[in-house]
Image 1 (cartoon, rainbow, N blue to C red):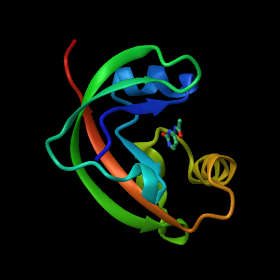
Image 2 (image 1 turned 180 degrees about the horizontal axis):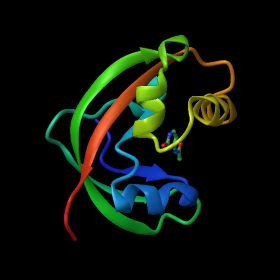
Image 3 (image 1 turned 180 degrees about the vertical axis):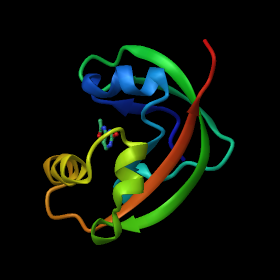
Amino acid sequence: MLTKMTFFERFERDILSGAKTITLRDEAESHVESGQILPVSTFETDRWFCDIQIVDVTPVSLSELTDVHAEQENMTLAQLRNVIAEIYPGLEQLFMIRFNVLPQ
Ligand SMILES: CC(=O)Nc1cc[nH]c(=O)n1
């Protein structure tokens, strides 16, 4: 089970504002469960910036991504596909983790 989650710094503002409410991860980073509370820090410097509560985790393949997923990531679908291809080149099986940011 994961005990923390990291995000690239470029996503921090969208997460804190509530504009980004999901993250798409590979299998290794999918081991969280509904209700779990996790500290979140930046991938680059491991700086804590919030705590999140997991809503749910759902398998989703790259080819199944829609505008709804993109909106939940505060991106266009084209942007989202590019981001995923950059982070997880060649990976088809993803896991959608929905979360809420807890008040600080
Ligand atoms: C650090 C890292 O992998 N961050 C990711 C990966 C996928 N989605 C996301 O929002 N953040």
